[in-house]
Length: 263
Image 1 (cartoon, rainbow, N blue to C red):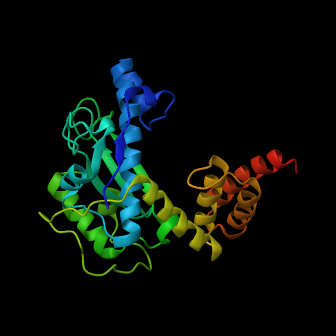
Image 2: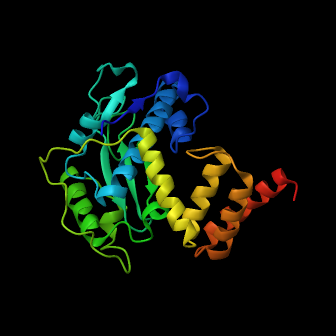
């Protein structure tokens, strides 16, 4: 299927919070660069969501050929090719790794100064727990991420862990250095598949999937707004949460939904 990821215009970044926004303001003091960082944050989110959509099908990530994957799957707004799609707005290649302890993928940018390991570096983390379970990042994928990080000279959370406790290998790797990237699906198809996966896991009582799906019903993200359904899912998340952090987040959201429903 053809990919339809869009690079959003700068104006669309207004009000978007990027993890490193405060640091950028302090170290750069340049509004335009902070706005560009916000735009990059939106772009990185789209990339992460597309990667997650592919992961549902392949159980794999293009760690060794991320640049080629981006060139194949990224599309600029209006279909124009005004920049190398494997690079961030400042011309530095995006990087991809995994965070084994947090069970997710991380899209990385060197930020406005174009130098890695500096204060303005940007990163977008996407948890795979809600769509593929707690052991989505298996030992094999973690090992490949460590190898890729070593070649790039970066330090990642995955390089500090030998794998996920109780994790399992995902089978033979589908991505190898120099391989031809598989086209991603459209943004709509990605969302549909993520919703389907979250719905299936939520039905089995998975707390993280229940929480993530509830938020979709609240924000009308891929589903119609339904506070009653969100309430049921959040109650499940509170009941089955295996961490205090998730339980508190779900309870806070549940309290907000109850206010909306007048209960």
